[in-house]
Image (cartoon, rainbow, N blue to C red):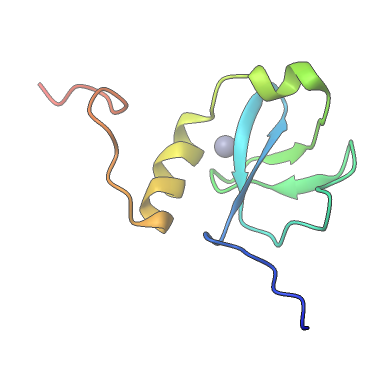
Length: 84
Ligand SMILES: [Zn+2]
């Protein structure tokens, strides 16, 4: 049986630099080791942090928008700035 790596979207989430960013690079099995330099969808270069508390950091708003766009999922009401 061939191994099928399920990858529903062309990005993965990883904490780094105080926020959870979406990363467009292929995620290595098991995720990136701590301190790996990757470029997030928002354009920030981050160092990944796999500590438990890092996963509770707030989502990077720029990555959130770009990730929704890539996944073709509309932003949910309230997650965008008011247009008024
Ligand atoms: Zn980001």
